[in-house]
Length: 116
Image 1: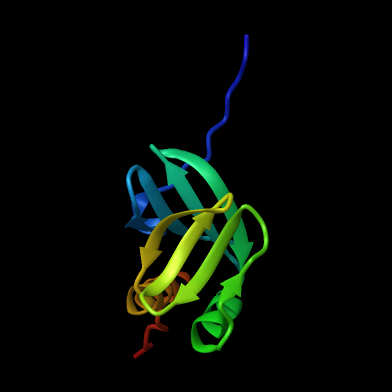
Image 2 (image 1 turned 135 degrees about the vertical axis):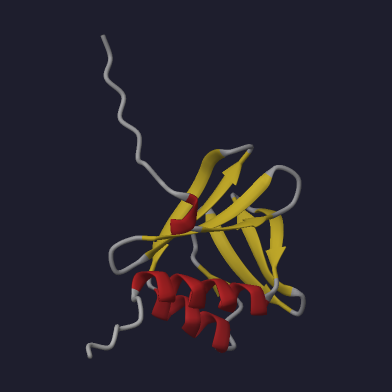
């Protein structure tokens, strides 16, 4: 008898972007980092853990490439290309990427409630 364990992920915990064909890109908050994941037909294909600060720095800098592994983000005039194992699988508009990072930030660090 085999016992399988699955990580429970609620859709409100992550942001999902539809890419080309059957690819999707998700940003999942982890402890102190963000997990960038590319799914192919709903199955996890590649992932990379990175800090929010480094992602923001990449977006605002003149750097064109982020990461050197199976998952790469390449900045160009049209936005950020998502490259998996050397193959471009989609593009994300810069403004959309920044918006997602801000949405995740508000989920990780909820606004302090005022005490009366």
